[in-house]
Structure formats: structure tokens, C-alpha cells
Image (cartoon, rainbow over all chains, first blue to last red; front, side, top):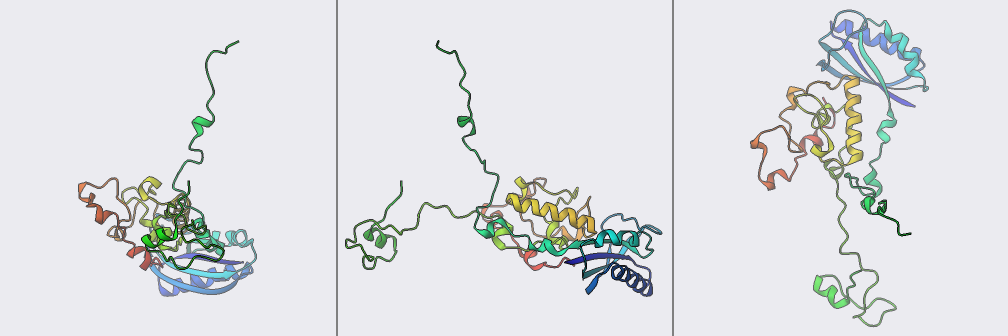
Length: 134
Length: 149
């Protein structure tokens, strides 16, 4: 199945980023992936305080989006390889089945805005109280 | 009770009267194939109406549903989304934060000038615009920003 990985690499110099990209794509290939494309999303200021596995705390990251195909257990195989990688900050993998999510209203159903399922609940489930007439 | 409309009534409403349908000789008799005039239109939220594609990489679109002060996701009573869309937006915001596209504690400062899709409960009286202005949510940002670069 198809996967996509958001690779965030440390920004040092162009050669370092290239070396980091080469090593991380090598990890993917070693896990049996077929890499379809790599998109460069550029350098960005990191939105969170991210801890790199190795080295100092980074403030800027170089974002890449890697589209690849591989057998299903790729995340578990990739984790030990990413653990000690000196170039990477984050490299989470996501499967592309998320794009198949369909809106319920596109199939013709009414959208739910929080209406009660049982509007007459109290009338229907009320218990009669009072004295029994023997 | 169901409202029935005769051919004369159809003419008054501007619908085509035409000849009587096959199997019906009298044009004053009620028509069985009339659509229900009391049927309510399907109410849709902003995202469903405009058919906006949601993606965890589009941090700009997802940040519109997040507080600029605390970075928390607004509830459904504020955003006005339907239940499935609100859950989907929340799921994608969490995913985006995990993957490193969005922050958890703040909203990015360069997203603050994005058009508001709903009235922010923490804003002052300047947001209480006249009804004509506030009832039209501008989705130019959501439609144009497909890729959150």
C-alpha cells in the first residue's frame, strides 16, 4: 500500500541536508520500500519544541514529503533505523488510506448537528408514580 | 397531512400545468407525483457546503478552527460544523501537530489575519458585525490554500 512520510531534517548546510536525505531514503529502501517521489517543502521554523534524537535542540527544519510504497509493517522496521540517525528531527509515516475518507453528507444522509436521537425520551420512558388502587 | 395540488394550483405557483398525465382525464384531480413542498432543505456546515478538501498538511486551513491564544481546538458550538466534520477536523489537527506542521500551544502569527469562519467568543464588541456581514463566512482562504506552504 501507499505511504507518505514527512521528513524533517536538521538545517546545517546544503551538503548536510543532502547527506541526511540520502541516509533516510536509504533506511526506507532497506525496509523494502519503493520510493515514488520526494517533494521539497523548504526550510521552515519549527512550530513545536522538537527534540532531535541526536544532538542539539533545533529551531529550523528542512521539510521533505516522501511518497513510497511498501509492505504494511514498514513503521516498525523503520523505527530502530531512525532512532540513531544524526540528521533527522522527525520522520512520521502516514498511510494514504486517509484520503479515502468520505463525508457522510455526500452519500445523501442528513448532517448531524447534535439533534437528539430520542426527542420524546421523557414521555416514552416515564415511570408512573403514585398509589396503587387495590 | 399531505398537501395536494391540482393542475389549476400548479398554474398559480408557476409550475407547468400541461395536459393531464396519462391515465388521468380530469385536470382538477390531485397529482400523485408532486414533490413535497414542506420538505426542509438539507442543512450543511461550511466545509460540506463548499466541499473543502481537508488534509493534515494544510496547517493554514486547520488553524482556522484553533484558538490563537491557547492553540486549542474550538468546540462545535463555536465552529458551527456538523458532528462528523468536527471530529475529522480534530483528528487532522492532532495528526498535523504530531507530524510537525502545527503547534500545540499557539496559532502561528502569520495565520492570524485569516478570515474568520465564525464569531470568536473571546473577541470584543468590534466583532459583533451587522447580520448581513456575519452570516456570510468567507472561505476564500480555505479554498485557495490547498497546500499549506
